[in-house]
Length: 475
Ligand code: MN
Ligand code: MN
Image 1: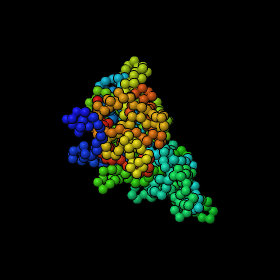
Image 2: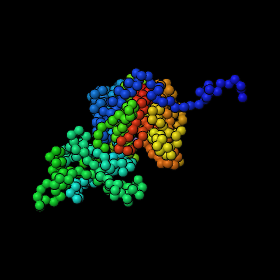
Image 3: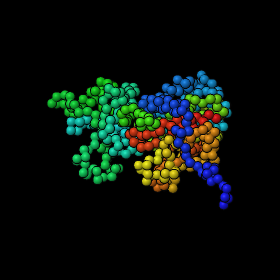
Image 4: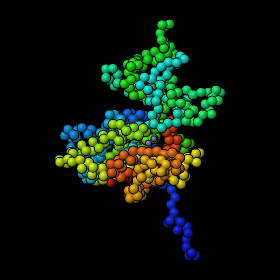
């Protein structure tokens, strides 16, 4: 061993440790970070369902000059460099494009996120009365821990297509003056049997019934007086009847607004960071892009929490159909090959949240291979379960390219996987575009209490994810 070797320098050169992103930001940038998160909280508050989020994304896109793809398809608008286009899919998912200099058949840069959130849906025939109380029967959506949804204020969001075929929008429980709804839980005094059950079994899916009223109307001959009262109120306010529930989509979500968390206001407590946080970061990034060589695309998709199936999920052909339409505008002799080439040359950051290391549940994680809140945007090379089953395993070459982009743009980033080996697992939309031959890596915000009614993110990670997406798309 050399006697005069400086081991401190050697360690600095050879070893790696992850930075705290707060410490990497200037005072001015910390201010920008806090301002950015005010916009994010507003986005959370106005969009609690996939429909509301898609609508808010549309509203913000329209305000920035994005135009409906139909205007390009019918020739009213010309598909030129710099064009800003949106395509809405059934009011539940939406895609934005900023057209670049290169033809689309040479590929795109995409940030793809999802706007559906775990929640509790109403069954198609939900309303009933029992013991002088009116309830909604429900069927949960996505991966929830059922016990977390009891004894907490809830709101009802949805759309009804009434008998006349009109669409009626319903939101109850969000305004300061609105009533809220709730799922009751058993008092501890009588919970001797319940508390010995596992967390998974303590609250049964069929007991997630939402309490919605208890004051009767009518006379001695009236049946189900409490239920009738609820129907009367809904009819007066929204013009709907019991039969209309059958053709409606109603979602029960936690009531209330996003709040700063911590004395230092460094975090946000809110419903549905997964995945409106990556959606907002991607949207904000799209809005700040300059002139592009390669077309940039922001995808805000539905149904990720239940496997991305259906015509509004990422597995739908909707997205490729839209891209094919755009290519056909650029290539007079359109061939399906151009679409295939486009996707093959496309690079994607699959914008979804990661599991942040939680020292209170240390045993579920490999600390060294987990993301930590405050250490910046998180890359996830692979997801999946057991032996990487069902994963998208990003290629080293692509990861290398992303690393270079991040380092050239002062992005504080970290890498981590979803918990320790064989502890569980999960997935995102990453594999879907990868199956069509694009390069894809998961990249997003680490979250604490993921899928709980109130999740936690660090503001600096939200901001760093926005910067990372912007650097990736701005090429
Ligand atoms: Mn997600
Ligand atoms: Mn999720």
